[in-house]
Length: 291
Image 1 (tube, rainbow, N blue to C red):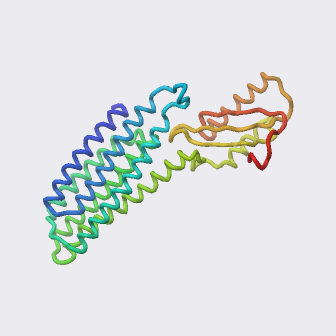
Image 2 (spheres, helix red, strand yellow):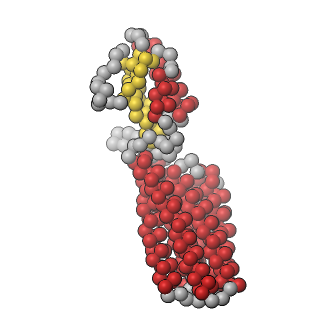
Image 3 (cartoon, helix red, strand yellow):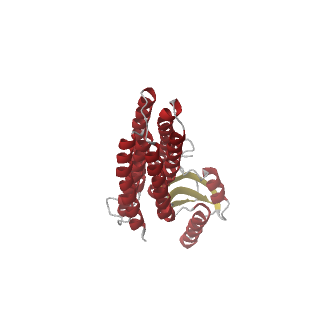
């Protein structure tokens, strides 16, 4: 299956899960199933965003968008993170309301529905795992992993409801909802934080700028480095711009060879695919203006 086909199949599965869990949750008076439905709804949205974004990212660059549409995947992940936060607030409100005013829950329905949700999300994880290098797809994959875990929690709550009575049986379901909300909010902040870092053109988390500087300075012919910037175009594409001060005054052909070597090193050591390199015989600019 292609990436788009995997995303589409995963979207349909999650959408069906949302409908089924909402129906089961209403009939069983279960906030846990409603929370799981909310989590699956965010999964479906994450997958939809990833699908649309991957199609946009495949579009060629234009004169108005010279880097193409790679940031579409990051925007999708950011939007999805905001949706996750909103869903979490709703689930917490509903769970607290049920803790204050508990209702009897049909444990068998909860157990069966949550178990089916667990199996379905495990299958979705299997579908999405090959495209996890893309941030949008990775966010959808993380959602599905989290939802499989939360479905397991709700299923356990259903079993507890079946075998116990009294206050525990009445409140275990909303408690499970709060646990699910914890899973969701953890994902929300992680995905939103990562996407904001990319949108603000921050240095990728796995790259140390000083290590890049030392690596460039170690290349034969390079005396010093300044105006060094590294950022991400998407989860899979990184860019760099730098000024290299060289030790002598080489010919143009020698400079071209140096630039080729620098780009090869950057790709090999830091997976930086797009590099803008300026060669200087002596440093220009101010140290205060350009680190």
